[in-house]
Length: 253
Figure (cartoon, helix red, strand yellow):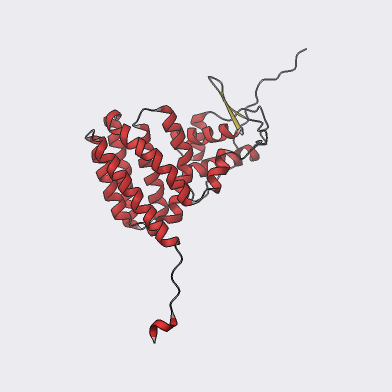
């Protein structure tokens, strides 16, 4: 008699609490890890359906899919077309992973990569965006302004990240969208590291100019304002981390 080796689906019975004040995708990744641990899931076990997970964690399906995609890249989960998501059996990487490299990167290095990606996005998004993309960008900008006015820097950084993710999606370039989605978590972390240096109102004003250029199919303006925004941010960061000159006592004599 053959042993039944069908995947095991176990119901979620333990509460999974999302940590606060962390980028949302990171929260979902941590919560999925809690779920696997609490339910004693092992490699080969199937997770609940996407709709069940999204409902349980209180997040949208796009955020859940992004978290699952990250975990799949790490080998901690495995997605099977038409079957579901399963606990994976990761093997230790032979060399430092992309996630490790990004985690260890300095803020300035993260912004160098951001510049390359966002300038390319600014070139393509105005020519390929849909009205739905424009509407989602306006909503993300509205949230940026709301959180800036309230002084909620963490929420502002998350909304800012959504704005740029939608801009990436507007390019229609699947590889670019995937790459930006991976980098997005680290951009949020870098953004939190320098958010106190950035004048949020000016950042929102530049976002509005960028949005207008995307809506008007104007890539030259979109590229120019993207470069201006990143130049402003990096300049502030570099000034803040530069050593302050030591006062010369002789100068006061």
